Length: 127
Image 1: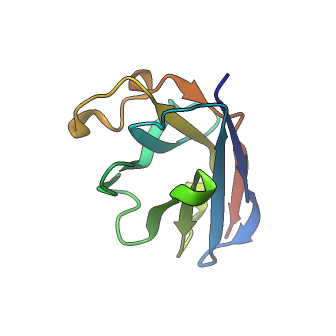
Image 2: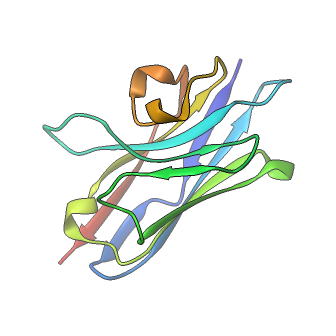
């Protein structure tokens, strides 16, 4: 059974940084894409960033481009989300997701394209 475990959430002041980690377990053949999503209270889950694990192509939401960086360490089966210049509007619960079925990169931000999810980690940015 595939499991995704996020860590690294917490509280930070605006302008600060935070690095989220997502460790993946329980598979023999790796995922095609790994993604980070976030959901704030009363809002829909939105795609933040994703990475194609086979070639490290990265995708970002416009709202985080230039501030967030997704990366992977295949030896550790871990994906990271480095978040810099954080803003109060980045406050949300952040979820890691994995795709083992395959899709075109243009769909990276669609939650239903991913078939495994972590429990999430809260990030709170204060002004």
